Amino acid sequence: MPVENFEPNIPAIIADLRIEEYSYYLPTERIASFPLEQRDQSKLMVSQGEEITESRFEQIGSYLPRGSLLVLNNTRVVQARLEFFKETGARIEIFCLQPLQPVSDVHMALGLTSPVHWQCLVGNAKRWKSGVMSIENPALGLCLNARQVSRRREEFEIAFSWKPDHLSFGEVLELAGQTPLPPYITRKAEEKDKITYQTVYAKDDGSVAAPTAGLHFTPRVFEALARKDIKARFLTLHVGAGTFKPVSSETIGGHAMHSEQFQVNRPLLEALENSRGAVISVGTTSMRTLESLYWLGVKLMEGYRPDNARFIVNQWEPYLMKTTVTAGQAIAAILRFLDQEGLETLHGETSLIIVPGYSFQLVDVLITNFHQPRSTLLLLVAAFAGPAWKDAYAFAMRNNFRFLSYGDSCLFFRNRNQ
Image (cartoon, rainbow, N blue to C red; front, side):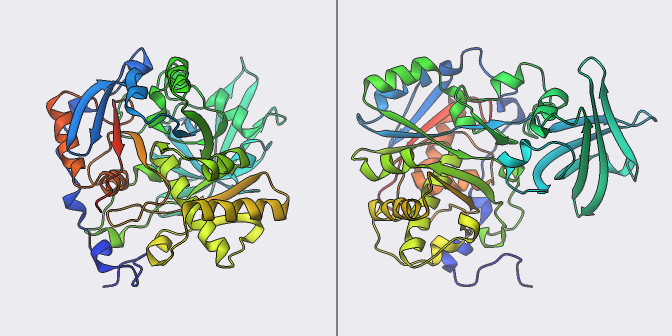
């Protein structure tokens, strides 16, 4: 039977990668449920070549090349989890995934006033067949209503309306919502998660999951990096709930990768074009955006023009493209396009999946957290670090590292032998 989303032209050596080979045993007690009090005191595992060492995140600058370019995702997590109670006492949880009407751009949608339609997951949906549910907070003067519009499999279209209607939907979520902690953190969200599950540089609302590699950074770390002439630049990729979607197919060729919206401004593009040092990606979200930029540049050089000025990179597209374009040439092509269109910011959407066999074009160093077994994030690490990822994870397990979103950090240098 044909597998949905299978691209028949991608090399079989990639499409037939077996997910079971990218797994490891992760005991529940090794999953961090809470962050450390001091962000930069997390453990840091450094994997470079065949050498694996342990340090503290506050010392990360000592491992990074002088004059590097550090790229971070400045998206901000919205309080996307809403808890309603029916008159019967039944608890219904609505998790806002992405906007549907009147606009699909996440950042724009959060600025809209009542009413709006969003794609959502609904917990305990069997207890909510019809009708309007409400959250009322007289102290805040807020009344939020939710109504089912349609359902497709596990996802619902929900219409939200509220009073006072001058509030934006983003403001409503901040007042009425809860922090959307990952599903493997089983405790209830607490008020302090609104701070600890954000990076210190979070700026643009739109994510339903934090870019967790950035949670370890503090002003003190940035100051130390600046003394080493390591420049920080920012992009925005709004992380969707699909980041936690397990790979259910036996081989990666059968997995449908989620799509996420991103934006990149001219200062970052110019820094990439002029960079003579290593490019350091803070997190897998920054990695996917940076690598997508290269392929967008190549597409522009081949005559591609985006619809409505929104660039798109599809899941398997880079595996099908043969090119000798350099990273500098690709970035220069994007800058020329911005000049021609009078734009300062590139808006795009990527469903790029990075798995072993992918050809890296921009990123030299990866800062990340430890990822779930059998996840696309772990495959990305395996693609970047090569077979050393297994030794690195075994080292972390032996040395009591804390895993996943609130856990410790890793530093991987690109495997040049693949």
